[in-house]
Image (cartoon, rainbow, N blue to C red):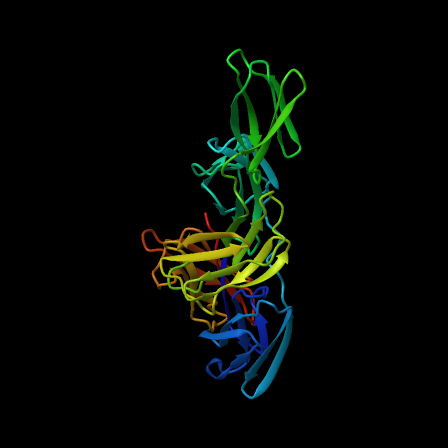
Length: 421
């Protein structure tokens, strides 16, 4: 959700973050009470970038250090020093849930993963194959996973994230098993047993031609089985059987925000699991993008928050390479076309007389390149007065009138908000 506001007056110098400050994530900080062109802001080791002012309010983009827990904002407002110590938060709890573990019978079947919760705009991804959001039973939501071809037994990480909230993704690990037929030529009447890990298959008996076989399940991480052939005298022969390809560790990179052409890349949530599907427990992953390393901070076992080199901008895609022990992945995060970047809000006039307390208001949704986007989902409101506005067909402009009749003297704020539909 984007929000924009206009204050008709600012009375005292103050430093105000417009939302929660999170390590490594850009946030908007506004400073009021002086000439906005002369206001400066520092924030310890944080990256601070000045933005165009909004009326009498100076605006800055602040990116706190990834490893920090608190940050001190220090503003100089017409020679007056204003300080504010802010505690940093971490991305909020996932707003949707999925079963942590899903079993799949083979790599050719489509897997359905139920989603619990109401995600207004779900972003889904997987470490293998393709995923899409479909309608489930009784009006619910289901993620449909189609595994990639020829992968054998493996773990596939699936993520779901509500893009309208600053929340971490929810994850489900799909364990794909493969059925294999082990066949042997031996003496008629010989019995066969096969042991895979702690599972035992058989016994079964060779036919008159000496042919014998068993069907077994191969799970991720299993690369060998033991075949035991026994004759009717009790003599047994044990042999090691290679089972073929079995996946190792799996990893998935999820952007915490929109990947927008011409804009700094969003922070990344990095999830890793071992070949048995449990959280990765080795060394932290080593990740990079073309042009620099990604700084990572462990949030919980198997989960890291990653920040790209300062203000690394997205072109048409973002190529992320990560190494987990002996496993390496490369994931391409494609940029979102026509992605909203901010709202432009205009109120005129801003100084109203009591005999005619009305003003024209208009809001436009804009992408990172400054192009106007369709205005569906944009709404206008006021804290005290009334706003009547509508979307002008074909223009993308939401326009109307502010009315402060009966409010008397004082200030009011007009809000513009965009909610995806």
